[in-house]
Amino acid sequence: MTTPPSAATRPAELRIDGDRLLRRLTELSDIGSIPETTGSSRLAFTDADKQGRDLVVTWMQELGLEVTVDGIGNVIGVWTPDGMDPEHAALAPVMTGSHIDTVRTGGRYDGNLGVLGGLEVIETLATVGFIPPRPLAVAFFSNEEGARFPPDMMGSLVYVGGLGLEQAYQTVGIDGATVGDELSRIGYLGPGGCPGLVPHAFVEVHIEQGPVLEEAGFDIGAVESVQGISWTEITIEGQSNHAGTTPMRLRHDPGFVAAEITSFVRRMVTELGHSQVGTVGMVELHPNLVNVVAASAKLTVDLRNTDNEVLLEAERRLHSCIEQLAEAEGVRISTRSLARFDPVIFDSSVVDRVELTAKHLGAMTLRMPSGAGHDAQMMARVCPTAMIFTPSHKGISHNPAEHTDQHHLELGVNTLLGVMVGLAES
Ligand code: HGY
Ligand code: MN
Ligand code: MN
Image 1: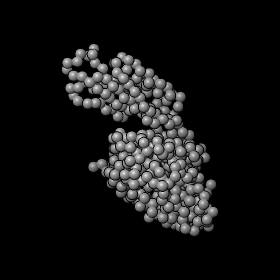
Image 2: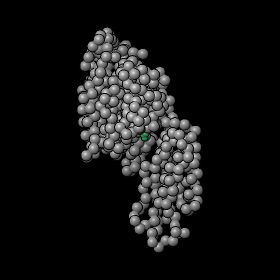
Image 3: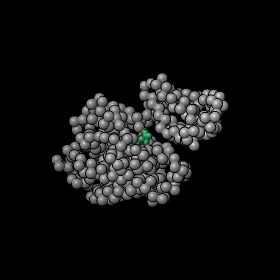
Image 4: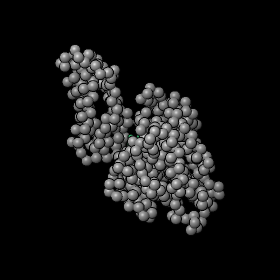
């Protein structure tokens, strides 16, 4: 039996409770909070991540969701309200979700908005007794950031069968721990099978994490695609030596080579232009002392582009630069790919639905690509998928100062509500 959409319960007229959403966002970001900021640090599978997980699972249970934990720690809550026709209850759910792990200097909204927004949609519908014609589900996927254990989107990649559990378990993090050990240590190595159940459709609301929407005065992004991502770890081995006595002609200096690679990346992406971006986010020297020519250096290069051909060219240029530097400085350089995902195009009918739903709510909408990686790009491999973006103040993210005003948070989650109900009824 599906609730006849009376005026009170017709989803198009429903609006979420923005204060309740903000309360949950605040309570979650208090876990691993970064003093004097609204940000948090909850690297994947740390104690702080566990605490965040436990809190969200409690909220899922309080909402009456059926909660399962799978083999990589993805948590899926399915809402099958009492009174739903049994054959409707057996249908694949419309799923939303995102992640609650953060980078070390994370903000309040990255990932959290997509998970808590999903809970808010379900609570809003349940409160008026609305019964959708199929179940709804909210997920948080493990280790979306990939900052401690590469690649990013690890949990959703396993969920869709793109990475085997055993390979994921053996991944060694930047601190030497392994995914398998940490997952069981925090008690989230669950029984749920991987790959996971295939949803009817998937939609994720997320902050843009860039300046486009705010600068151009738009309220909602109807995300059409995610750009390609290439992460490379570079290890340089030279010869440790005395900083004072070693003539420059005898040096094999990994610190110098790391700096050369860093400035090469900036020059190269500037030359390639358009949507090419490049970041050296991590540089470690050993022994990292003022009066020692480094023995070794390790750095990471993050390259991204909406055009895969140009991204491949950027990778080729990086590797040729590395070979030339190794030859010129007499050092040994090895590289390891940490992540490589081609650009992803979302389902145009779901993108249309995002745009129409947001416009119906009075939002100024913009169709756009995503510069950041998201779990939705993995879900797009198995079901019709798209994303909803809300503006980020000054485009700041992966920074405790990350901010989105409540009006836009509410607009994003109200759009999510309309899209989820629409997909359930489609
Ligand atoms: O790296 C990314 O784009 C995402 O924040 N994990
Ligand atoms: Mn994110
Ligand atoms: Mn992120």
